Image 1 (cartoon, helix red, strand yellow):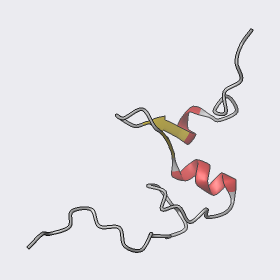
Image 2 (cartoon, rainbow, N blue to C red; image 1 turned 180 degrees about the vertical axis):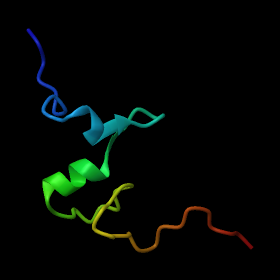
Image 3 (cartoon, rainbow, N blue to C red; image 1 turned 30 degrees about the vertical axis):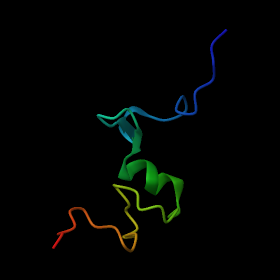
Length: 60
């Protein structure tokens, strides 16, 4: 019996797996979804950027 996967309904160019094994949604999928979830998605087409996130904070 095949187990249902949440990504079964996605096209190949709507997601990919990161080096860590996470599913990363592409801009195409996020536009198709039709709204911004405000989670700071890597490919957010809506321009949302989470406040307080710094890629490489400088320590003094």
